[in-house]
Structures are given as C-alpha cells and as structure tokens.
Picture (cartoon, rainbow, N blue to C red):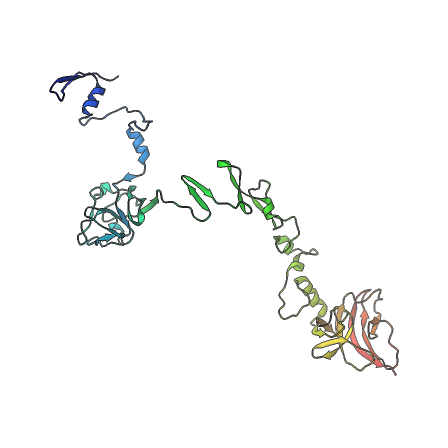
Amino acid sequence: MPSFVKVLYVDANADYQEVRNTIDTIQAFGFDASGEKITSVADGTADTDAVNYGQLQAAINGFDWKQSVRLATLTNVNLAAPGATLDGLTMASGNRFLAVGQTAGAENGLYVWNGAASAATRSTDANTNIEVTSGLTVAVSEGTSADHIYQLMTADPIVLDTTSLSFQKIVINSIVGGAGITFAGEVVSVDTYTSGGLQEIGAGNAAQLAVNAADISGSGLIANVDTIHVDIDWATAATDNKAWKASDLYSTSNGKGASTIGIEDVGGFTLTTNVEDALQELYNTGGAHRYTVGAGGVTKGDLVYISADDTVSKMPINAAHVCAGVALSTVAAAGLVAVKRFDTIVLGALTGATVDQKYFWNGSALTTTMPSASGSYVWQAGSAVNATDFLTEVEFVKRNA
C-alpha cells in the first residue's frame, strides 16, 4: 500500500498548500529517488507502463547499444587527417562516424571528426576497454550504410588499439526482394508461376510449393502422390525426353543395352546408328570393304562387280567381269554396302537351304543350279551353313561354251 504523507508547498500566490498523497506529490514536484532504487516493479504491459530491469535486459540481450553515428567508412581512412568528406558527406565538427574498413583492424571503432587536418579521436562512449566489448552495436543514419546497424563481432577480451576489431552489418529496414522473392512488410513471399513450374497449393501460412502434375506430363517426370515431390518416370519406355535407368544401359535384353546407345559415324564406316548393330555388322563383315551402290541397288547375297570408281553393281553373267565379292546387306542405289569375298557368314540370305549345299550366281539371285546357258560366266558364291545363312567362297568356275 502507498504511504501517505503530509507535504506543504508554497504556490504561485505565496500561499501554503497541502499535498495529501504520494501521487499528488509526484504530480506536483516530479520524483527524486535520491540515489535509491525503485524495487518490485511489475512487468509493463501497456505502451505507457514503466518497464523493469528484467524486461530491459531481455530487449537488448546481446546488444551493447551506443549513440548512433552519422556514417560508416568502409575503406581505410587516414585517421590523423581524415579530410573534409567521408563516405561522400561533408563533415562538421563533432560528427560521429564508425570506422570499419581500416587496413589495421585495431584502428576500427567509433570516432569523432575534429577537422579535415585534425586527428579523429575515439568517441567518449567507446574509448576504453570496458566500453568496447563484443556486441557493441551502433546505428548509421546517413551515407551508403544509412538505415543499417553494425555490431562488433570480435570476441572478448578486447584491448583497444591492440585487438583487431571486426564489425558486421545488420540490415534493419532496407531489405528488398530479389529474383523470385517479394517483401511486403514483414512477409516474405516466393514468386511462382500462375501456370507451369512451381505453384502455391493451399492458402495462407498453410500454402506449400508444389508441382502441377499436368505441367510435367510426358516429360519423363511425374508428380509424387503428395504433389510436393517430383520423381523420375521409370514406368514408360525411354525416349529422347525420358530418363534412363543404369540397369537398362547394361542390360543384354532385346531393345536395351548397346542397342539403345547411338554412335557418331563421321567417316561412314557403318550402315547402322547404334552400338549393337554396328558390332553385329563388324562380326558379319570381318573387315569387309565398303563401296557405293550403283543403279538398281543390291540385295543381301548378291554377287557384285566394280562398275565405276569405288562403286559396285549386281554382276551380270553374260559379260566378263571380275567378281568383287558378296553384298552383305540390302542397300539402295547411292548407299554404302559392305562386300566380302571369302570366309564371311551372310545372315538370312537363304531360305530352306541344305547344309553344305553349294550356291551359284545366276545374274539375279543365288541358286543351287549351276547356270548352263551358252556363253554364261559361272561363279560360285559359297555354301550353306544352315537353312538361312551361307559362307562366302567366291570363285570363278567356268565360261559355258
């Protein structure tokens, strides 16, 4: 309970007046604690309430606030003669500034400008060891660091003019949105696409960034069941815009592995475009030479002759030509065909053949019957190794009379 005292004072009319309680006394004269403490102060809750020491400490915990400075120098300044302007501002005697970019870190700190040719001096609130401790904090009002605060990050203990002082800038009210980020007061938002890409699913604080499944359909990606995550679509066959499993690349199954890996054949050495078929071609050709195909094209198993420069055509049997070998594949005119004369298996060139049956060339196709027409040039092509394949053994037999 408050203590009530009787206090007399002389008013403006020189009359004695009685102050009947402590509230009247404070209102009339103010309050002088005469060096004593005010104790047991409750926590303030309204804007006009007093705060107690505990509330004050909680509010400034970690910050040792100093009187604000006009500017901060971010590069080295000759403190012995700082010049008439600092950070682009014309200085006036007594202006406070914060040096944070000194070459010698021990020179950093709070200073007072005393003149262009006069040495700057440390401010009286930060010129002793006890006043310069970790957490020292000061606000900047002008210059390039306007509306920022700086805090001393150097750990204690600090010996002024000996310990290198490091200040860190803390942005207080000049944050602006960057690419894809928007600031509205104290709210930070992500700028998302209205359609496609990341979108906001939900509303308010419960909103989440998610992927619209329709936007990635057919791209080799799928939205997970919760639509928040994106997974690789392994369910569909690999195409130009789909992901590939490592297991598919080394698989020996048909349609996987080497058969799906393309090759760049700048020199035109193969007739195929993937590793599997190119290897098969090498196995079959055994180092066969390649020729350009002449008019009419050639069919796998045809005997061919050199009809022009680096060009082969089906070999007629009624004219004297030297057989270059057997065409190992069916190729249209102007294409490239591999040709081999001996010891090469030609796959799929025969139908219903008998093993070890000899085959001859009749001018248009392979046959088991030796040509008998008068004047015909008889050439043996090879012999069957099974029902569909034959081994090339090209040789001239005779010319019919």
